[in-house]
Structures are given as C-alpha cells and as structure tokens.
Length: 392
Ligand SMILES: *Cc1c(COP(=O)(O)O)cnc(C)c1O
Image 1 (cartoon, protein in one colour):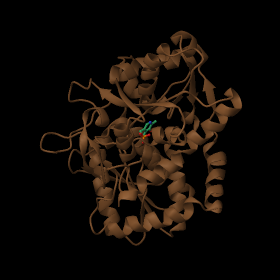
Image 2: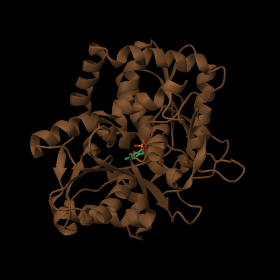
Image 3: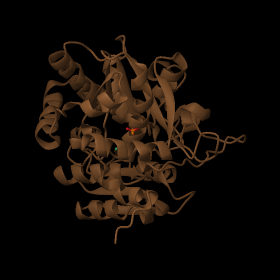
Image 4: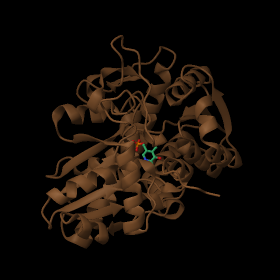
C-alpha cells in the first residue's frame, strides 16, 4: 500500500466488499493512463465539448489596483457547465465506458459535481444516479432542476447530517451492492486510491495548459500559484505540473465565520489526521474523533476533509495553506465583478481574497496565476441574500 499513498496519507481504507471494485478501477486506470487513443479521445472532448484550452487572462485593473505582482486568471469558469469539474467527469466516464460499466453513480453536495456527472452521462447515454443529502436538496433547487432535465435520478440521503459526507457514504454502499455493472464517479481528489491520483491527473490539464500559455505569452513560468480548496481537485490540477519547479503555491481553505469559531471548513489549518471515505487525511474532528460539520458560504468548499495529497504537501511544506472567511470571499466577489467584469463563483472568490493580500507584498515583475475555477451564476441567490439585496 505504501507506494500508493502520499507520505502517510491516502491508501484504501474500505470494506472487504469494495476492495475488488477499487482494484478493478486501479487496474483499468493504469491501463489507460498512457494509452494514446484514450488520451487523444479525452483531448478532443476537452477541446470541442468543454471549450479548452481555457484562456489565461491578465487582470490588469486588479494588478494596477493592488500595486504588486502581475495578476493572471486561469479561466476555467468558461468551461461548459461553468467550472473545472467537467474535466474530471469526462476522464472518468471514458474510463467507465472502457470498463464496460452500464450504470454511473455519484455523490454531490451543492450539486455542481452532480450536474457535471449528469452532463457526461447524457453525452455517453449511461443511466445516472446521484446521491444528495436531503438538506442540500432543499438548498440547491436550480441544480436539482438541471440534473433532472439532463436525465439523472436523484436519491435523497436522510442519514447523518443529510449533507455531502452522508451522500458519499450512501454512494459507496450502492457501489458495493451493484458491483457488477456500476461505476462510482467521485467528484474530487479524495476517496480510496486510485481516485485521488486519477482525479488529479484529469484536472492537471489546467496546469499543463498554463505551462505552455505562460511560456508562449510571458516567456517564462509563473512565480506564484493560488487556488481554493474544497476536496482539492482544482488546486492539484493547477499545482501538480509545477511541483518540481521553483514556483510558490498557496491553497486557500474556507475560513467560514472565522477559524476561531466552529463554523469553517479549514481541514488542513484546523484539522487532525484521521480516516474518512477510504483514505487517511486531515479531517475536522472533535476530541472523540467524530467528524465535525463543515461550514462555508461556498457550497463547494463545505467538506470536513481534504484530498490526501494536500495533507502530504502541507506536512512537507511544499504548498502553503491559508484561509479566507465568508465575509472576505463576499468582498472579493464584488471586487472581481467591478474590477474585471467577471462574476466568480464563491469558491474561487476565496482565492481572490487571498490574492488581494498577497499581490501587494510582491515585486511588480512577479507573475501570480490564480485558478478562476467556476462562475458565479449558481451563487447569485446566496450572494443577493448575504448582501441584503432587494430583488423585487
Ligand atoms: C466543487 C467546486 C470546488 C471545490 O472542489 P475542489 O475539488 O477543491 O476543486 C471549487 N470551486 C468550484 C467552482 C466548484 O464547483
């Protein structure tokens, strides 16, 4: 197991029933990883279905205003379905097809991964079941409508806190019961091996594109990378191709109402190592080892764990992990809207909040690239509510 993990983190902490299934996924992924036909099929989908490469945008007004490093956005919010999640879903559905699976299941919190999964299932004509906490269902009406229109079946989860963590438990239960024909399409760089590695590889298209875009347009690699962290997939996608280069990296966790309160999702900053959803990683837990509820204004960051590779990158010090609060993210959202004419999702608004602090401390010829991993359309009602806007 050791070579499959990230330092002491990761692994395959699953029941006997699931073990053969994850071995099957592991073997299938090992086969396609370096298969030219698989990779070129995926590249075509990225180009013609997602709209890749996503542009590298020089945020000039923000740069001038902050008065330090040159700020660039990697614009994954322009992808089909409005975020980076489609990159991973396309990779995994191609794999499921290769494996001859006839049914797809997935978990979703806010519904973003559910929508991306329902999208690729429609495209590949595979039936799709999405597990979603009953509490999240009442909070995310527009995404329920999207998934339904795309043909997905939504299974409300009534156990536990009725949110993402419980949805993931139910999806794993379903998988064990329908081993023969079902593929479990996990939405972030977490879960048992090989998922954290596989999801990171599919998302690494973000960093690979940035490498050549930076060389072509700027003549050199960036100096600083910034991304927000839910389970950690968009951040790893940006960071991973640069881990061996002299590039500083910052992961921004959701500080919620403040990390001194109990209302945040800062698993790396405030958590302790433990086991959840098949892997060992940093988790928000109480003295008894019970998993605590996460909180963030950004539904996509609202997870009490973190992908195991980030746990390792924290311990080795390769990546610095910081936090931004709900309030800071809301302010950063408005700042980005007014300065660049871009409505970011609340998740990357956390990264923007950190850029507002970091950029002014850096020299003017430094290059800072932030992953703008999602667009704000899905968050308009939350934002209007938080800002006390009158929509009548
Ligand atoms: C789901 C989501 C995230 C969090 O997921 P990661 O795996 O950490 O990338 C961040 N931003 C957006 C827009 C999302 O939809």
